[in-house]
Structures are given as C-alpha cells and as structure tokens.
Image (tube, rainbow, N blue to C red; front, side, top):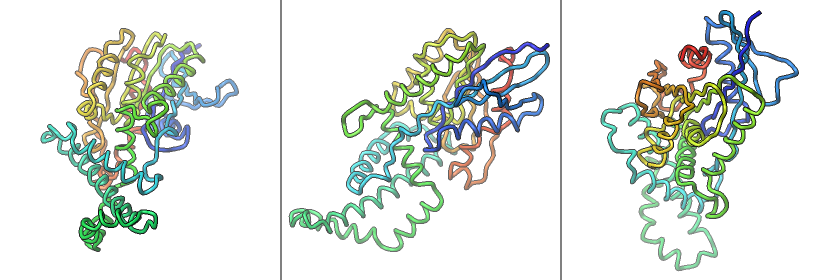
Length: 355
C-alpha cells in the first residue's frame, strides 16, 4: 500500500478583479492537464473542505494529497475608473507624479522588454489622465455653481484644452487604448501606489497594505489549521508575489517543509520605488524554515522583472521560455500565461526530495 503525504499550496493571485476561486481553478486545471510524467487526479469527496481543491499526485511508492486554496484579496482592490471626474483628476495627478518621478525608470537600458512594458503602462496612464483632464475642465465650465472666478481661471488653459481635443489627438488616444488594456494598467499602477505607501481610503481608516496583508495572513493560517501538512508551498503570481513576500516575511508557520514560488514577479522593479520591499525580501530569505524560493519569470513577459534573487543555495531562478505575439506581450496576455506551463507545474508537483 502506497504511503500518503499531505501538502498545501496557497495561491496569492495577482490584482485582477476576478471572482473568488477563479485563479485557483486556472492553476488546478493547469496542474491536472499539463504534466505527463506524474499522474494527477482531482479528488471529489465529502471530506474536502469548502474553498479547497484536492489533488492526488502519484509517482512511485508515494501518493501525495495536495490541497490547493486561493488567498483571495481582490475585492479590496479599488477601481479608479469608477470614481467621479474630479476624483479621477486628483488621483491621476498623484499617479503621474508618483510614477513619473521615480527610480523605476533608471537602469533599463539592459532590459529592453521590461522597458517596453513600462512604456506601455506609462502611455496608458497618460492616455487615461489626458481624457480625465479634458472631462474635468469641461465639467467645471458647465458647472453652474462654479461662478465667474473659476471661468476666469480656466480661460488661459482653454486653448490647450481645445488643442488636445482635436480629432488627431483623440485618434492617437484611441489607438493607444485599442492596443493596450488602459483601465487595467492604470488600475494596477493605482493599486501599487496605494499598497506601497499603505494609503488610507479618504485619509482615514486602515491602510490598504495592512488590510490586504491581514486578509492573506488569516487565510493562510486558516488553511494550515486543516492540517497537519508535510509541506507548504506559497505561490505568488504577478502583484500577488509582492503581497506574498510581504506576508511571508513575518508569517509564523509550523510545517516541515516551506517553499515560496513566485511567477511573473515585479519585485525587482518595485524595490526601486520603495526600499521597504527589499527589506521584506531579505527577511523571507533569512527564514530558517524556508527550504526553497523558486523565482520563475519569462523574458517575453513585459510586465514582470523577477525578484532579483541570488541563484543558488535556497533560491532557484528559472528563465521561462514563455512565448507570445507582440500583441500578447503588449496587452499582458503573456503575463497571465504561467499556470499551464510545464516548468511551472513541474515545480509545484515535484516531490519534496527534488528540491
């Protein structure tokens, strides 16, 4: 009779505002359908807790029961496009300043693909901000309560508003918005600023970083309570890699084997903007119970920079051959394509002795 070990995989997803469990289901589908040398089956029994997907991976004399959960935090992501015109104008101004005057733009002469991704994000932000400025000025001019003072102040900028409202400029903006997922990219840049600065909603309440970190920590602890488990693997995809590293830096866990896997991580890039993130990465690497941090990133992923880890010892850096067309890379579809790639699934499925 085969021995059975129990493992837990916790997925900390990226920032997309998707339904709870949808990213977990994508990962599970990739794990079941991609790998060939290990038999992976989905378990449908009454003893599987709600919110958990259980897989059986059979290879040799050992059968591994793998529970997969999603540490969902996406409902906390704010939506800048849902705000009013005035709020969008103020928000857009702060984003232009925060990202425009930033260390993330330095040192990219040797990172041509990431530079193209950043340029795409910058164009998206400027296009979104441009439309917001035009609507903001027009809303003020049409506001009957604004009074003659506002009209006199805006009069000098009216030629500029008229100029940027020409069909040629709008045609260029339409082209940019057609090629790029503008609202998605602006939403990511907005969320990243809020998280990195622990911004409070309307200047009050709890900071967003604190809220997200608490939510993810509680879900990992709740999942571990269903154990005991022989191995815990925390998987952070996209901005979820930042959140996962932030949580894992101080998370008390009690498992024999702890792994951290980052997919399409922007950590290296964002440490150039906020140095506290580098401190969290260092704390993760210094955990005595960390068996391995596997950082998987693709050169064709224009929205990831990797985690900038030293390759060796308790870290492993994987340069993923994740291919995509120019439009796929520019639009971010390549960035979303990690879950059903053999190298990723093999890393997650391999037995503890393989690492």
